[in-house]
Length: 102
Length: 431
Image (cartoon, rainbow over all chains, first blue to last red; front, side, top):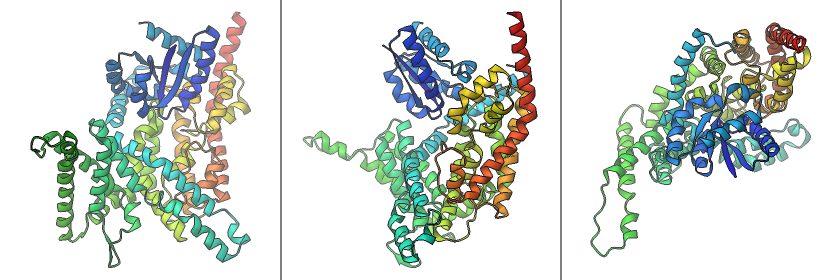
């Protein structure tokens, strides 16, 4: 089970992406638990995740979240703005999987 | 995406500002404090809307209408009208949590410190706390009190002055005293502050903060120039793909909420509403039109004049979320970010709409926002109606503004669409 956490300002726009990523995961036959939260909840939810992806509009949160991510030893990155705009679930899913492998 | 050197320089300039504003512990605690209060504020707002249903006063008798309003009154009186209390508790809690202290004590000490500073007489009746002091008027004092009390509490906790218990006293007993000293000292300091202010001409700290800080700031914030600056800053941050509201609101929210509550008090008292610029002015008439930059107009325009496949795709993708004012697909997909071609309408449209809305309200064509907090995800037309205290003019103004935004965007979107369309044609020819 891959546990993928997305974070943006209020978890609204990333939740659009969650649906598309779930579809992409199903197509690939990957069992994944994907969910979106607001940035203030990200810290607590990170404990339950294998990877964290941040909405590009909240990329200034990266430094702060990196500290917690480091303690929990989970990778994180900012979602590519183009993939974000196109709500490209597959691209973001691939990115998440790639980060987890590292 | 065009990414010229100039853009890079600006981005390098803005990113640290966004970082500082967003990661400042006080501003973060402030924003989270408002988040704590938000569900309560919205609960109260819903009942203000229900209590003021249009035409109801004409259908039922005057007495029945008064009884109806009285019955629903406590819903907003216990939440929206005294929102300061919840914000203060939230700030105290969140700031203490940040310091990894016992957050609930931080919230409690902030609340108590604020109440110590609050006037406890009203028109020479003692033993009462004026409701206004817990709402709009006390908001700024509350915010400062929450910051300072949480800091003092943390300071005293870290000093670790404890009451030494003789051996044999159970561990739990001595622990129960552990928060006593920090809280006791913190509140003593606030009591001293209150006593000192009693002998100044201001009388109360509340009066002092209100006169010296809150009033000048809210007067400034209620004006058109400051609002245009705030709106432009939000647009500029978003142009670089940074969440403008999150960054700017943490600075402006105290002012906008204070203005909002002044209007609510007037609305419920049936007197003239004092402010045009309020939280709802921004949330319903600017953000609430499809998201920041009023991109619902852009989506409609794409459906009307869009020829390129890419734009049509973005329009389809962005429309369902856009109705509820979530517009990241448009901002990142069109794209708006870093796209010089749309910079002019992106900056111009919100300023024009701000001015139109301001004057529509100042001339009395459209009622001013009634102080009701409408969730920002409420679709336009409905949000304009609710925000103005169930006035159809509010909905009409939103439609009018939507058309204005479409007209401003028209030539620019046309060029963008033509570019995409020709590129798509070329790509097709190559295949």
